[in-house]
Image (cartoon, rainbow, N blue to C red; front, top):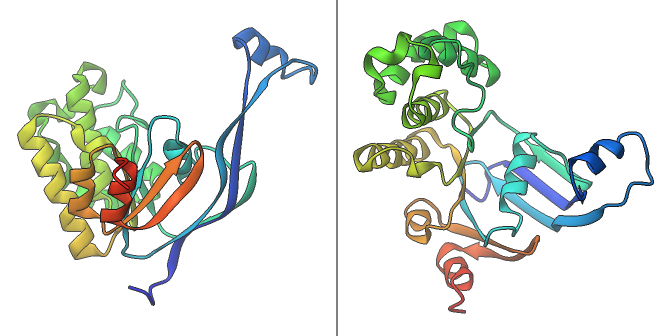
Length: 243
């Protein structure tokens, strides 16, 4: 793996957010630079590289900067300074129901979400039955998504995300979706695509046990800074305060 190409490259990345007192102040700031705000340094000068086929866990307490890193990798937000280079099709299990249109059926939303991920209708068509079978929404697949329970929407979102042949898979606590049997099915599927398809995995979680099953490298974040990058066992010890 040491000779594999780099697919995620963070170089001196900084992300600052402007925090306003309320929505009114935030709106006023569009028209005036005099509106007061506080600077929140969410990510502070972070650098790392992830190579193709690596499985890396990111640990950190709430507010450590983990989710901000994921959002920058997926292009939801951009760094204030520094550079980020991502090579490959990214599938992110963050908000599993994002990209769904509630007025469309589950089947129609498979095509919509697939298109948003860069697939052609022909490519989606080949995956359609696999996705429908995996999601376990049965006869509801041809009903509007607005009629789905939150669990059904999450299962369909997961089914699409893991079956679109991603090159980089980003998971943010999404494996807690559904009942125990479905969670085990999700874990098995993620492990399968890592082992068989050479997918690069970036896994953000508070569950060190689950992370250890998938990852051999861990990054620890604290208050926006990266405090450790190395062996998964040592990363867990540092995160849990045992070292």
